[in-house]
Image 1 (tube, helix red, strand yellow):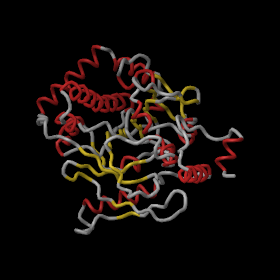
Image 2 (cartoon, rainbow, N blue to C red; image 1 turned 90 degrees about the vertical axis):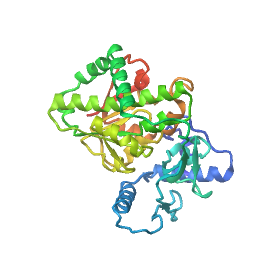
Image 3 (cartoon, helix red, strand yellow; image 1 turned 120 degrees about the vertical axis):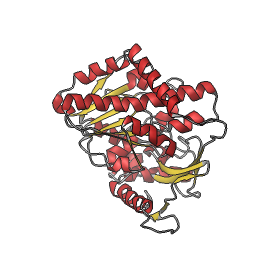
Image 4 (cartoon, helix red, strand yellow; image 1 turned 30 degrees about the vertical axis):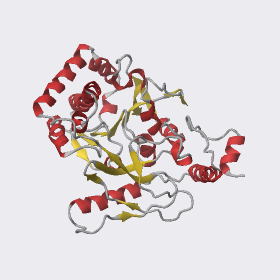
Length: 365
């Protein structure tokens, strides 16, 4: 009997929200193997692997690798330990973006549990592992260019909406309850996957969807700036602002610069997490919390749209809680263990911003 089967029978199995076993017998055996390794403490996302990928990509960017073929990095199969190399041919290729895909433990145990939209898996049918390379297609042929004037107009509009609805005032009240000592720990904010403003604006989607999503993205980028300004004023620290999002384009860079935000290539955002970091993770389509739990560093604070109530995970509402995004960044036993070291603060009624009541600020004890 496997460790997983024993854990299930003895009701000691760590909770895996919304998880269901695969139907295929071979996939069930794979799930047992994944769970056995997980219970022994084997990390899904070892810091050493991500740092190795970062070093290779940095050297490639600097031209230190010449014109060689896309570099591979070794990755052990999570179950049997065999080599499952990752080909790091990352970046835009025409209207296709090749990027890293980070697989949460639930999907690792059942590949059919959640299949991200608009992703083409390039693993050639091999067993799913925590890190893989996927491709995403983008249609930007029907849109128009995003000018600085339009960006500034939307930035002002989001600021006025922010003020009219007193959203920042509500959030500021929460920050005001946190001691200067706790706030002074923060020296940088790292946000994950807020979205490319340029791609959204010039996409071929409908006018209403394009502008609503674009407005949210402008608002969130400005929120990073506002939180940084608040922390600088309260603590006197030089708080640096970073965001990791592989969907950014050259056209996005000017807008980020205007806001004082520095983009980070993946997976640098994760390797930069330390005890002085505020991790901003509201609707990233990757398991930021599971990766953070594996990094071995406890960030000073985490801003996360959480579905955890008194140690239990509540099921999100399919129609109102961005169900697909939540399934790509689910809680796990290790995330729950990490959060035991934090106090959490709610933001009360902030309307539709940041998932409203579900968003919490976790402060390290």
